[in-house]
Length: 281
Image (tube, rainbow, N blue to C red):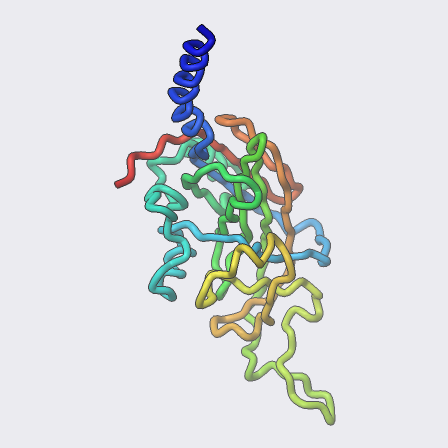
């Protein structure tokens, strides 16, 4: 009798094992983000200049996004390609797949607000060691940079969390080119001047997707020391920085519920919902 009972328990355990493995598989989500600013963001107050701006080491760009298209023009094999044949992962979705379309429309019509970014994609839920940061950019373009830059990601540990590391820059008029902007102190070697030296704003980080190869995510860390270059080294027109604010927040998410990241000068709306990917060949 005990032998038969042992066989029955063993059979049940074997029968349940595929279900357990399926439950252990990383779930899929659709992530949608809206970042907006106030129209008169920088007209009434000045902000701190000791900001620490950096892109993460473990990053990727969304395929079909504006950044992804830039990357594809420079690389024959974009780093933003989905891994392991998952054609739905980290691809910028079109408006027809938006779930916050009405919210974005309302913000665009509301006085005093301006939508800088509205983007959605699908991904698996991964822990902090595996989940990549998605690089984003939005608003008006100024030379090689955009008003809104930075990175965001969704992390699944025991609970879902959303992390945002964003900066919003107000650019001034185009600066003189490097060939005409020099220090003229007697007896010194002529060197290009840092156009932001007087204002002491932080130098904008080098955009990692414009490198020839992606950084090694295993060795780079999340936000370690990042290589930066002075703004005057870019070939595109360079704009001086007049003001800047940064948003660096982490918040817990409730699946299917709209989450708001509060900030005095800009806001972030996040919606994460479950997604069932199609079968892959």
